[in-house]
Image: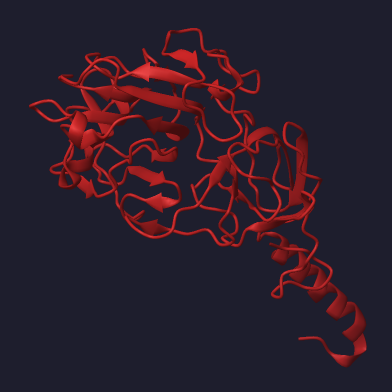
Length: 357
């Protein structure tokens, strides 16, 4: 408590402490948003990202199959698919066209993406130019959309089995049963799939594997997976996209990939249409989200390459910084004002001298 003798100084210290505390909510200011340019945001509580840039970023919408220079690694293995303009996402010029018929190898980075970390975040914008139910062979489709492997003994993956009740996330050979979800992809609709991974302990059902499509989660985010056992203790170290096992579908059954972002941390930056970060499961209104590409990252300042992606503009959208635990620093989005600049309206819960969103 402040007494009368030191009242002024005491309250100044209290306000300063309150301001510092309030800043931990996240973003306090941002420079102007221009697509393709660097945006700088200030705030507090961002954490430290040792390697700011993503492990890999592919922007097939710009006509190239090689990984972007915004990546910190150059992918030198095979990319399965060809650049095409027959089906493109809004604001893109091309997409990677991948034939899924009669081929059992993975789409995009065909021989997988290797990593050494215990955590992972993956973002992919793609479109299935076919109906899973109608295109299935006698044994179903068996499309594994995303798979984490320790080759070739155990894995965790999401898959569609051509029936709405047979889509699942499974930790193969280590978990009894599967986590079922009910979000079959729609034909000719661009969707953004996000995968959030944290390795589990040996013999402990505490591994994290979360799947989100267009802002809707496939299962409760508190779900945990048994990913390693006493006989299979190794951690996953390679991932694959869209691979059809026992493939009996017709050639000329295409998938189109606009972009892929792979990072060996759960930290990331998202621009979204949602003013408040949601955790809807299986149902609800969708959100348009676009991944941003970090350039520098400290606890109080981040620089990133602004991607408009398929958004109609930056104006009226919301910015989120996601921390190392996979959760947003603040669930309240930082509003990007009309004209693509930064929001300067203080939160009603913050002191007047501090801008928090």
